[in-house]
Image 1 (cartoon, protein in one colour):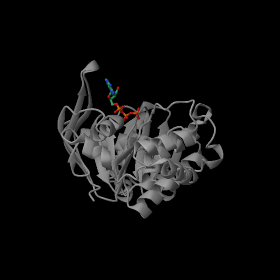
Image 2 (image 1 turned 180 degrees about the vertical axis):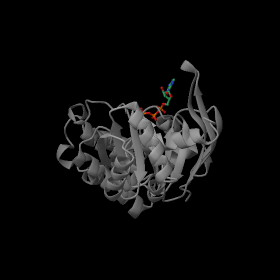
Image 3 (image 1 turned 30 degrees about the vertical axis):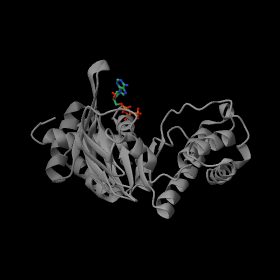
Length: 320
Ligand SMILES: Nc1ncnc2c1ncn2[C@@H]1O[C@H](COP(=O)(O)OP(=O)(O)OP(=O)(O)O)[C@@H](O)[C@H]1O
């Protein structure tokens, strides 16, 4: 059956505040693909998930989920999808087991079937021991695992997960990652996941789209995206503005096409082999009598990637 997602020129403007939350977004997700939407707060991730899961309507463009139009055939779409949103309203007085059994009954399981399905799902998300506690007393991590179990009740063909691990401790995050990988690999479930964590998208997704201010600014496999960016990041600070300007001039000239970005009195360079190139850069600046205050070597973070991508966009004829 069809586990694809096709999105063409999708836009959403909220009348309140006149916010353009999603701007002309197009992408496709293949059946069985693990796809991540990576972006900071307010980038438009949740809005996109809500449109694709038929919870709100777009103001422009078109989206097909499992081969069905999200606006014209929302009931068909809902048959094929599971959704775990950031905030779900479940009755805190019920236990995890009761909620799962209830969900199973809603999806048409009989009493015995819903009991069995709940036992299996509790085991999968490692909540068997806490199954009979009230959900109101669950920790954040337990709630997220229960949310995931609830979305799996009807074995959806396509799973939408909106920031499923935000705020979780590493062990809960790992448990969710493991289960998502298993669902994708063993069941062939198509997964559309949103995240603010580069590491999460990197570790799970086959392909990533980076979204910023409602627009997709880059798409590729984790490897492709990283190779655009460079493996390491060298950050230099200087005591005087004069030294900073001189360093920018010297390094831009000598490192060729490599990116040299100046922001907030810091100079940042993307390189392939940081340890080696750091020494060369410092030596070069020393020869030019530029006084360096500090040098720092790190791996690129999501912020660095945005900085690089947006500075590239500005460089392209200043269209932004
Ligand atoms: N119901 C709404 N009414 C008005 N503006 C909204 C509404 N929902 C979202 N927005 C705005 O749309 C933009 C995108 O928000 P969205 O929640 O999609 O971002 P996000 O990438 O999911 O962020 P986060 O990681 O914080 O959840 C933001 O500027 C937000 O304030």
